[in-house]
Length: 134
Image (cartoon, rainbow, N blue to C red; front, side, top):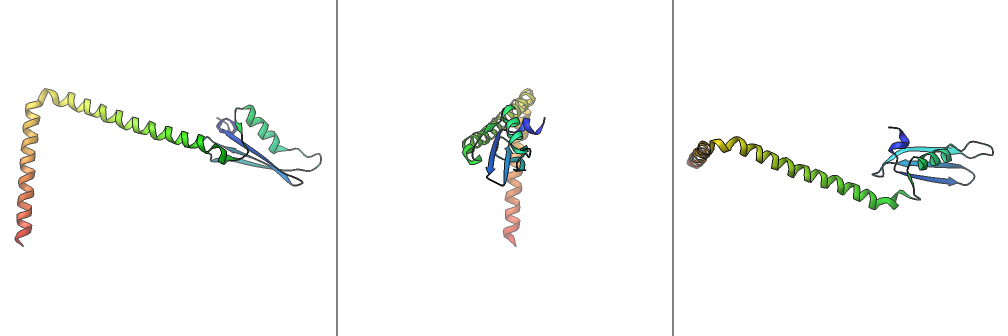
């Protein structure tokens, strides 16, 4: 995957009598590449060529990267939504797996949990009594 393939947005700025600048951005608005070309009579404008190639590869020409804030925000929300769905799905799968392992041993599992609760409660009470005695 080349540099132009990963570019989503491109800006081109021409500073009269000085130079031209082309900046390539990814879909989150991060700068991928910045190309400057000195503009002289008869000189090759590399920044203009890169802009044209980026547009041919599917990049969108924008005047200012801040104009795409809505697109960046939408991409960020997509990432957050995907992560949330992954966590929920993993929780459901963990519950199903645990249930399938414990289901044949329900009586033993309930007995063990009840005993564990009684032991833990007793340990907490004894610890508090010991700590309060000092």
